[in-house]
Length: 235
Image 1: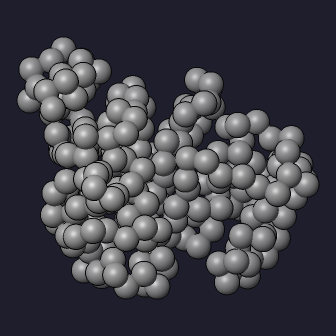
Image 2 (image 1 turned 30 degrees about the horizontal axis):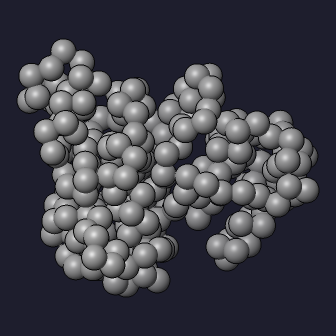
């Protein structure tokens, strides 16, 4: 799957939130890095067809994003903030969202999908009893229920402890072996441990687009975190 973004602009009232974004995304795990307010969530919501762009062009393997029905067949989206019915079990949540996606899954298929996110032993547990990391993993399972070619995730690590964060990163790496994963964060460490390629946004503009390792060299820095700080200070 190839995602091509050409000259993307998004305005809210008189404010330009995204300014002439040009990026090309292929299979694998790709990070969208930038400080709070850089435009990351807006970009992901546009790619998820949840909000319209002001101008520019976006294609998913040649399919224009204006064709929302077709685009939504090939993407899964997990926002930063989400919730589940607290008295539904883990199993019931996945069964419910599968039905919403017009997917009829057998019990064995649901348990298999829960196994992929290490929740198969908790299938009878109500979601109100889950930890933050468990809820994130269940959210990933929900986003993947339709077997999307592209998974779009907004700030998936925020608020999690180190052990939970490691588990989530491992899942994205596994998913990215044969799909396109696009995730946003405002922490350089998340990118260093999760992604091979990244786009750095600041004030609605792309200030870096390329391999994670190359950013250190191009910005003449000792660490990824130092390179990131230099990039966002220059805009």
